[in-house]
Length: 356
Image (cartoon, rainbow, N blue to C red):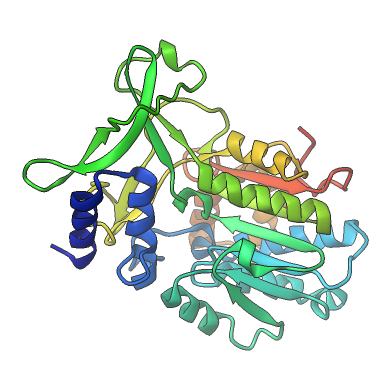
């Protein structure tokens, strides 16, 4: 029994079953034995590969899009480029290399990295050493206290934030789904015995056992981003896999060494994620006062930004073709991954996007 699993077992034995959100928080972000606190999970030698690790063109396209938005909005002074969950720092490195081509932007640019993993911070610092722009780190977006215009990037960040799950237990009632222990001491899912019924829209028409997920943590972050974007100007770009219409069903999953694993096995050893509820993020950005633009598919956006032409400029070839195909093809990341852009009300719309 791992130390983290043992501590979660003792917590349940002492206080009773815990929420799925609390289980995810402990498994992913425990400061001593959580998944992100103890490893670099990215790349072929890790558990999964993200878009920046697939091809440098992903970060280059995003860097140009932000630079163009900065120019279109009158080149506001002292902008800050913010990345949430920066991984190895690869995406930031590629964006900065692109932005360096605009001296007026480069001379003013500041960077804020939102990362609470000491392990990944060390990797990021090594990746970004000698970039020539001031970089600072913060544990959360709220703690970063960014002043002036900001351009926020979140690539596969929201999928790793804790979710809550609700299960239809009959008579039109959904109760919170918890993590408890079976008689043998193994983790199991169970419905809350507490009288806190919850009924999602349309839930009364679903079968007993139907799962519904809510995303309080993601919504709070997006609301803060929306408020900052509206008050300080700038834009936010969120790339992630998820759905554009709210529905029922479980999306919580575990991955280890590029294969699916049991969500309740080996907490701290597996990556836990859930599909992003983009409609909820849209509403959260609105509550913050900003304007969320029409949700786009990643493949469409990257093609409109010119990723195929950039690949040819870099020399093309079979390997490059495979990389671009993985990023934009509908049967790869192109359709499942969505892009949400948030801007201030009445601001210019970045290339590739449109008003809702």
